[in-house]
Image (cartoon, rainbow, N blue to C red; front, top):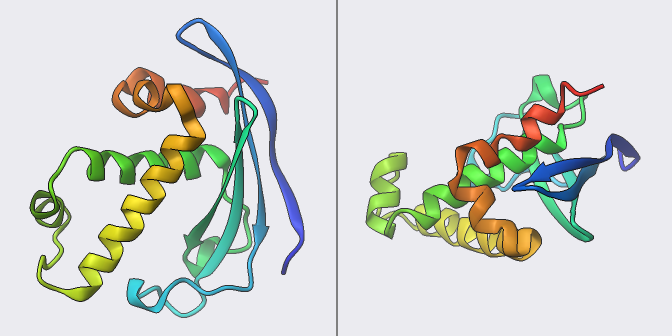
Length: 151
């Protein structure tokens, strides 16, 4: 635990005709996923540092027991963050709880919603001017995934 694993080297990525760099590293953390999120015993948390256009963002990424020995791919982490941000940005609290099947009156639901709000703001700062392009345009949201197959 605690050693850094290089997951992907920075690589040029074309977004709307201008070059960007995206990459990341992951470090297995000794932290456990938050109890209120009800993860199975044996789940693990990776501290993932993403890099994009000269900026860095570190975020926890929780995985189940079968995935804890393999570092997460930075593209998977980014897609997960974008999915959460999209659900937050496009719904009111009531709509968000209904869409995701949460009890709107539960304290745990409010905790999760506030965590997603904080995470979304962090992602907005990380992506800078590219935030809305990457978040709202499927062809741009998939740019990272498409880079996996480039030798």
